[in-house]
Amino acid sequence: MAVYLNQWKTMSQCETEDEFHSVYDDLTSSWTTSVKQYFDKHIKPDILMYSGRWLIEKFNNLYDPYSGVTNNPSESINSVLKRMTGWQELPVDSMMLSLYFLQNFYQAEIQRGRAGIGNYRLKARYREAKLDKDELHIPNKIIAPDRIIEYVKSASADNLVPKANQQVTAKDSANDEESAGEATGAEHNVTVKDLVNDGASDSEEPLSCTPIKANVDDSSDMPITPSGLVFGGILSGLDSDDSPDQKQATAPNYKNMTQRTMAKFVVDNGNVTHVPDCNAFVVTGNKGQKYCVTLNPETCQCPSASTCYHIIAVKMFVGLEIEDKKTEVSLRTLSKRSLKRSDKKSGRKKPRINDTDPVIIPAPDSILNTPKQPHVDSKTPKSKKKLRFG
Picture 1 (cartoon, helix red, strand yellow):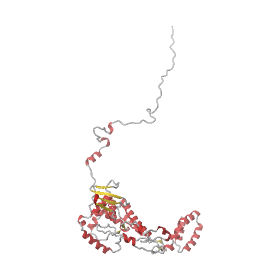
Picture 2 (tube, helix red, strand yellow):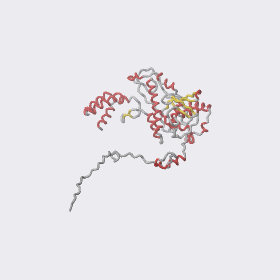
Picture 3 (cartoon, helix red, strand yellow):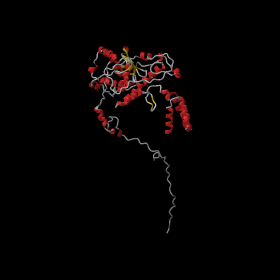
Picture 4 (cartoon, helix red, strand yellow):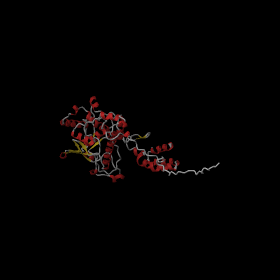
């Protein structure tokens, strides 16, 4: 097996396609038929179309003559996974939600590529998959890969900030947005309209697929503060020099973290609508379903048995404080549960479990289930005693 792998590597390092065919004919002459058939069917077409040295050398810093491929095209995906591993106590549901946001990002990029805009382009042989700009279904807010973990953390940290920091007027908030927008520059100020119009080109030339480069910074593992701004299109947190008290206040709260994050995502996408006539709210879920939500009392049409993220989204929408319900413990209930099952009282009319005899089902081969034989009295005939006269 090592010989085959070494020869495959030799063929992948050929500088031209003609050299590849020459080396291929020379090396495969000694291969077994099964290995050669597998290589011709599964590996050779990919080398000729995608991974040959003469193809990938066109991209900068992607191929090295000594080590081969040097760069991973999925940098943004790896950055999210790296931040997950840096989060030492990552809940499983938060991990799945982070991958969901990452999927949404690339789904939007694929749609933009099919429409001829963005960082990706369709190749000539896939032109039948082209879309018009009017057919795009892009969410109002898209979370950049380098901000996904921070976004998930910040959803649970919003309510941990001291109330003194939350008392900000609308005027101060507007001033903060204006000043922060100037500080961050135009690269973060992207709207959905800009996403659709970005990179529009009428050229029919098939362009190569360019991987999306995420701003990966290992030092930016802290969650964004509640004052982080949300710009239309791509959500991004602002890098600020927070005090140690503020960083401690924004520590993630693992309870209901996923529900808070999903609720924040719903609010950021503008999927909460107030219906004054009905004194209720209509919340559009992540799958497009609409649910009616009321706050007094807290009700929702979704099948969730506990507090769902639709109710939390409405509270975020109106600015209400989200309180975690503490578990109620009844000492009387605990005292009853501490008793054994056979010792619990069952009421005055109903007897306890052990007060009645259990119903016993006889075994199939037991005496009770064995058919009885008719009883017949049988006597051994005896001769009559002889009379003796003497």
